Image (cartoon, rainbow, N blue to C red; front, side):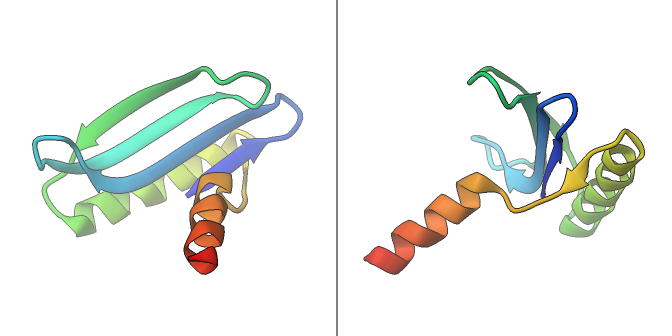
Length: 85
């Protein structure tokens, strides 16, 4: 999922993924839309269901703080590249 805060020019991205060791968790990335800098966090979870619950919590929190869900530019780029192949 991808959220932006238009007034503050911030973004937040979260998804269920595996880290380099194969641990399932929720990967979170957030930063400014103005720079390439970002902070990343990884929260281990016990199952995909637990990961989905964590994403739901993140979604509620982001909306409460003035963010809105939008299309992830990274996913848009990957889809466009796969269509061109």
